[in-house]
Length: 69
Image (cartoon, rainbow, N blue to C red; front, side):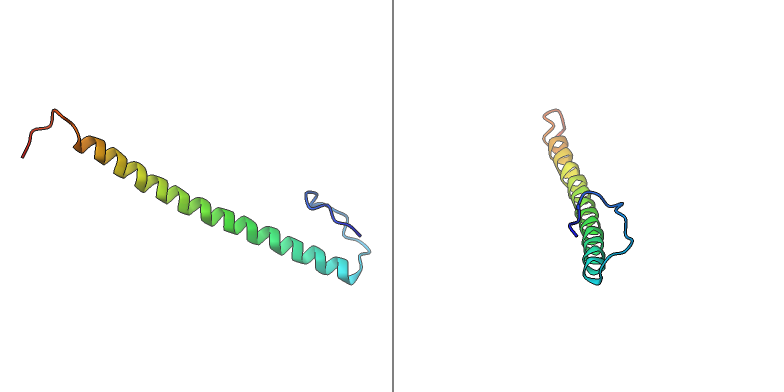
Protein backbone atom coordinates (compact mmCIF):
# COMPACT_ATOMS: atom_id res chain seq x y z
CA UNK A 1 0.00 0.00 0.00
CA UNK A 2 1.44 3.35 -1.04
CA UNK A 3 0.97 6.32 1.25
CA UNK A 4 0.26 9.83 0.15
CA UNK A 5 2.58 11.89 2.35
CA UNK A 6 0.43 14.98 1.95
CA UNK A 7 -2.88 13.28 2.77
CA UNK A 8 -2.87 12.69 6.53
CA UNK A 9 -6.51 11.59 6.74
CA UNK A 10 -6.21 8.20 5.09
CA UNK A 11 -8.42 5.28 5.96
CA UNK A 12 -6.48 3.28 8.55
CA UNK A 13 -8.68 0.18 8.44
CA UNK A 14 -7.46 -3.28 7.42
CA UNK A 15 -3.79 -2.46 7.15
CA UNK A 16 -0.94 -4.93 7.37
CA UNK A 17 1.56 -4.76 10.22
CA UNK A 18 4.19 -3.27 7.91
CA UNK A 19 1.74 -0.61 6.75
CA UNK A 20 0.81 0.25 10.33
CA UNK A 21 4.48 0.52 11.26
CA UNK A 22 5.16 2.72 8.25
CA UNK A 23 2.19 4.93 9.12
CA UNK A 24 3.30 5.26 12.75
CA UNK A 25 6.88 6.10 11.73
CA UNK A 26 5.64 8.63 9.20
CA UNK A 27 3.45 10.32 11.82
CA UNK A 28 6.36 10.40 14.28
CA UNK A 29 8.61 11.92 11.60
CA UNK A 30 6.02 14.58 10.78
CA UNK A 31 5.65 15.48 14.47
CA UNK A 32 9.40 15.67 15.02
CA UNK A 33 9.77 17.85 11.91
CA UNK A 34 7.07 20.19 13.24
CA UNK A 35 8.87 20.45 16.59
CA UNK A 36 12.19 21.12 14.86
CA UNK A 37 10.70 23.86 12.69
CA UNK A 38 9.05 25.45 15.72
CA UNK A 39 12.36 25.39 17.63
CA UNK A 40 14.25 26.93 14.72
CA UNK A 41 11.55 29.60 14.34
CA UNK A 42 11.92 30.56 18.03
CA UNK A 43 15.71 30.81 17.69
CA UNK A 44 15.35 32.96 14.57
CA UNK A 45 12.90 35.27 16.35
CA UNK A 46 15.31 35.75 19.26
CA UNK A 47 18.22 36.37 16.89
CA UNK A 48 16.20 38.87 14.84
CA UNK A 49 15.19 40.71 18.01
CA UNK A 50 18.83 40.97 19.18
CA UNK A 51 20.04 42.01 15.71
CA UNK A 52 17.36 44.69 15.37
CA UNK A 53 18.17 46.03 18.83
CA UNK A 54 21.89 46.22 18.04
CA UNK A 55 21.33 47.90 14.69
CA UNK A 56 18.95 50.44 16.24
CA UNK A 57 21.46 51.16 18.98
CA UNK A 58 24.22 51.59 16.42
CA UNK A 59 22.29 54.22 14.50
CA UNK A 60 21.28 56.01 17.70
CA UNK A 61 24.90 56.20 18.78
CA UNK A 62 25.88 57.58 15.37
CA UNK A 63 23.57 60.58 15.82
CA UNK A 64 25.59 63.62 14.61
CA UNK A 65 23.54 66.02 16.77
CA UNK A 66 24.35 64.19 19.97
CA UNK A 67 26.66 66.10 22.30
CA UNK A 68 30.08 64.62 22.78
CA UNK A 69 30.94 63.56 26.31
